[in-house]
Image 1 (cartoon, one colour):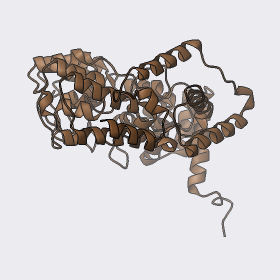
Image 2 (tube, rainbow, N blue to C red):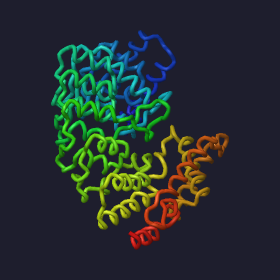
Image 3 (spheres, helix red, strand yellow):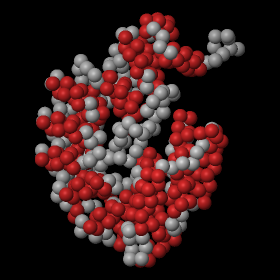
Image 4 (spheres, rainbow, N blue to C red):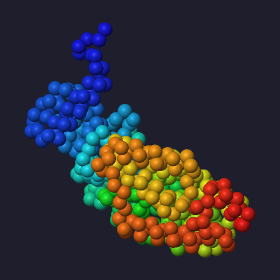
Length: 437
């Protein structure tokens, strides 16, 4: 029989105590009092490690500072999975799918702010159990001051403790200034990672933007021309192949990164080295499916390759159309964002825009997907009717119209444009194009 002390259960009590602690910090109570309460509720180092993890999840920099002031060596903490606090935050930025229990402000801004705090003046290049160091974190976040400080301490610029080098991360997140600093200090532009990829390959990897005007994700990509030029000028092999046989150009084509593909072609990447069997077969994450305009990119990539003199075989073109149908046809899974409490209104607005787009231009959706969207929108609208409004800025409408007009000029065959195909069912579109290729 449960006693008065254990009827809630240990996990529930921990959650209640944690919530009270964070509310106390948010109310601005004196630091000394909070630390006294913390020591009574979280007496052991293990307890404080759990509190630190909770502070990271909530993006509560005030609590992190208080925990550090209470003599927990936060830079040396390793969680049960071997991650350091810095590595945990870096994974959050990369995956883009972590939701805090409670925070005020932009999630990405708060995450990067805590990373900057950890990197402010490290005494050494701390390394966690997975080999991730503070130099890796500084290169990933683009913290120039921390990169310079760590290198001035004599840290090896070509660290091989982690799955990839610092230069790989700086290239992946397209921090041109950091890449330049690393190369100046002797970073190897051909260093291989766990997949035998080089920093040029890393340019094609998933890189969630770090702009501060969106909560989680946008499809903006930083310019790559300067990055590619710097790497090649320092001896990077533009035809290097990774363990899957991709050259940097091949990977950028498969990742449907148009700008990067154009840049590689500009700097002499050999289009003849493309492996046709690897084109149009990349698997994208749900996050990418929701946010990148992949269906349009498939068509534009095909036109880009054709303009560069690459002739897709009949088999490759059929595979392209099937790939286009596969990505575009997965409507229900990727048309809406995650349904979390903190983003319900944001999601409702996004769904309204998708419905507006469908109604105005008649682009095809399966009946199941359309019904799903309309039902979801109605549910979200009923949660807070006072915040419902169907208003789209004129600039957004003009931009949308311009994008639609572009599809009318992209011809998939002599008689069928991308616009026409987008209005067809998937099976009808495939049958029509297949007969005309």
